[in-house]
Length: 91
Image 1 (cartoon, rainbow, N blue to C red):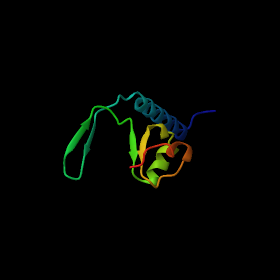
Image 2: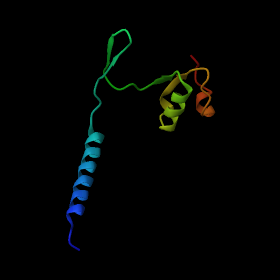
Image 3: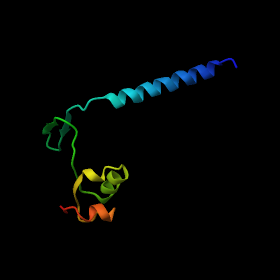
Image 4: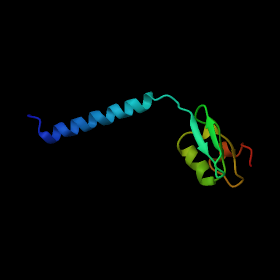
């Protein structure tokens, strides 16, 4: 079976995507810069490791991404997943 131009293009696209994903996985943690509403800039030497969630929807999203272990505090309205969130301090 002779490769067609469309197949060649698809193979090139697949290889580029695979290389991009590989490079993203090899990326080192860079300092994180955050600017608040007052214009103050804070530089964290590495990505944050602990999370305090102030919205129930954010709490659920973090847990859906399998990062529930990073949550160290929640708002008083967060109630899911009960087994994890019920034990955390409320702010």
